[in-house]
Image (cartoon, rainbow, N blue to C red; front, top):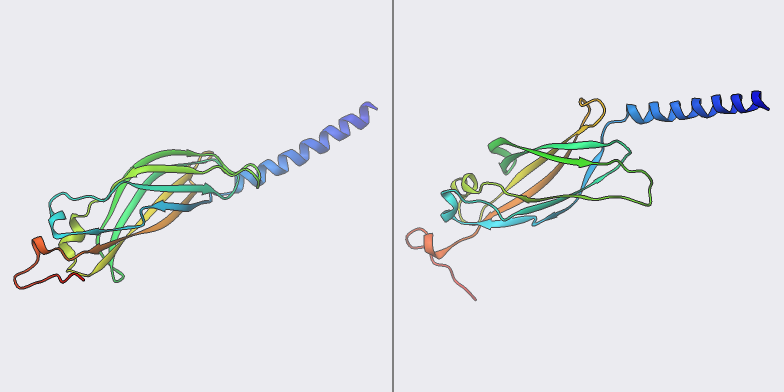
Length: 173
């Protein structure tokens, strides 16, 4: 009986070590599932220190790796051309990996604010641009394996009669 229990213990230990080695080899995998707001309008008045509304971004882990959100990097593009950035904001958020498929935890960053001054200076009335947001996650165990979740935030320069050029008229229906 003792030999059987010892053999069973060795088999269980072998299986547990094999499972653990697979988990340690994984890289973090985090997905953005929600962002509020998705875009906003800016005006020429935002050229002096303007900023976006507070942005909330929600994340969900896709595998069992525990990781940390370490930073957010943003760049501004207009028609695919980079015109501002990259800029970086250090963040800290512990994200626990997914334990089973039924229970999924969500993690949210609230109050992320981006500058609108570069957008207001670049755009003309009726034009749009986007901010590409890169959220960088680093695994808890090694600190060298990363995952980047990407989102896009939109800007639209709304015509405003208070700062419109000479002769510009906004017609409302």
